[in-house]
Amino acid sequence: MDMIVGLPGENIEDIKDTLNNFEKLAPENITVHALSFKRASQMTKQRSRYPVASGREAEQMLEITKEWMKKIITFLIIYTGKKIFWQIWKI
Image (cartoon, rainbow, N blue to C red; front, side, top):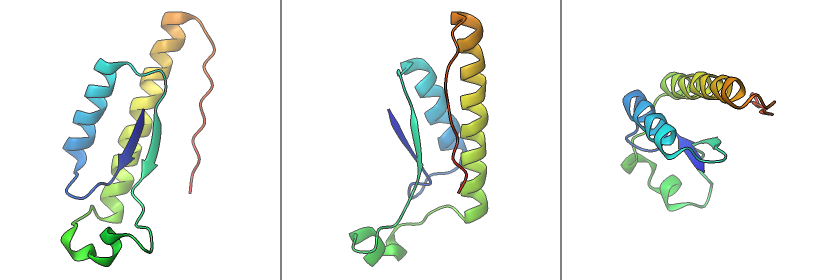
């Protein structure tokens, strides 16, 4: 399941709600992306129509997501007894 952090209008409470829903859905994998404005996209051309989080707020959203992932992975390791591989790339 993919998650895009920093969508227009999204805030920290929305991220927490998304993560709670992920917990209920129990997907086999989660890939987290940060919103990126592509050069030729309509969103970029009309950027003023799409209010997005500040850089600081987006960082907080990603940090909340990272901590949630650590909690879930720790639970899975304890629950299943299996080693789970995960990797975080820092940009």
